[in-house]
Image (cartoon, rainbow, N blue to C red; front, side):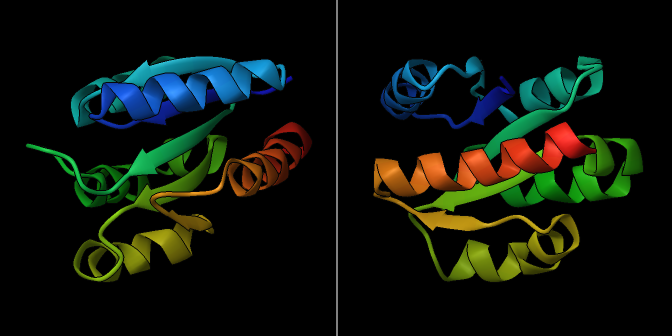
Length: 129
C-alpha cells in the first residue's frame, strides 16, 4: 500500500486525515511546515502521495508547489493532491503548478469518501510509475 504525506498546519486535520487513511491501510507521514514537507519529499526514495494545504503560515502551499515544480525529481517521483479552504486567491496562484503536477483539488471541508477516491487514484499513479 502507498504512503501518504499530509502537509497541513492544522493538527486536528492531520490527525483526522491520518486516522481515515490508516484505516484504509495507508502508511502516513505528516509535515506542519513547508520546509519540513520538502525535506521529507527529498529524503523519500519511494513515491509518496502528498496532500498539500495551500493556506499555510510562513511558506504556504503555493510556494511549496513552486519549489516542487522547480525540482523535477520531486515533481516526477510523487503524486500531489491540493486541498484548501481558500478556493479563490491561493487556488488561482497555484493553478500553473496544479496543472504541471496534474494535481486534483479538494475544497475544505471535504468529504472523506472523496478524499479516499483521489488518494486511491494517486496510489494507482505512483504504483505504476
